View 1 (cartoon, rainbow, N blue to C red):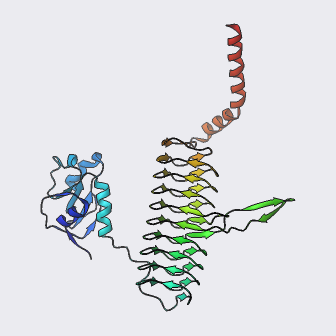
View 2 (cartoon, rainbow, N blue to C red):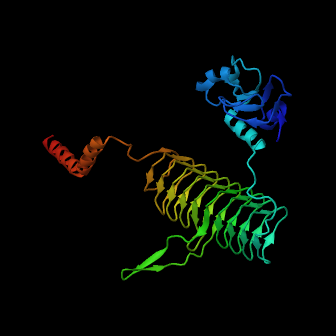
View 3 (tube, helix red, strand yellow):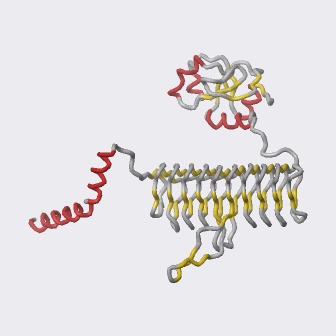
Length: 342
């Protein structure tokens, strides 16, 4: 079990200790559940009233919230939530996807394996693959021919990475993810479909997280690219030739259609759909359940979707929606009549 003094944690996050700097911290918790050797955080002043009842050994909180808080031990820092993330990383107890190299792992003689690599049971690594130092690969994962995986990346159990794909350093690929399957490329001829071979790759940068059961399709001709620092939640679909720029976050069940381009530092809410061949500029926030069917060229917050309603209300609104075009024509006619009478 890792343990740090309060001063060591404060130094790590750039904060100041108030109270016993030698207090030992061994874990993290919430304001409600943390005990005497755990640290909790307060990021929202609305919950300041919970400080008095918290059993946490110390609290990460802002200078404003520390005033009059009455707590004995604190790390005072400008951004408590980010500081909590850094502390949680230090005290993380999550096991690695694998420890050592299992006897059942099958590694091609033509694969290159870096130092301190761990491979779980029944891992398969094909010819030409290059696995960086300190990579940990969970059980039943398949690494295709000529795949490249950078240093310190974690690949959890049951992941499939197809041929020639590239994954950067310090990435985290969760169970069930499929990297590099064929994109949806077909040409119609006489009522039949002709498959278009997908010969591009998937290129994933450094410090990228791919959620469980997310699929990232390989490019048709050019590559599908996910840039440094992106985080993609569970059960997302990233279609062929999509480009996602740095530090963009995408929540669960979102679909990015083929060849769309997403800018830097975007945040896309869950169950959203982005149409193919359109661009979204930097610093855009898209609310959950949004449907984006044309380019977004200005930073800001965008929303769409229809909120749930009672069935009778929904039916009335649905009927009115079908009448919208007729209503529009009637209004235009009335406007024209008024203009003619003036």
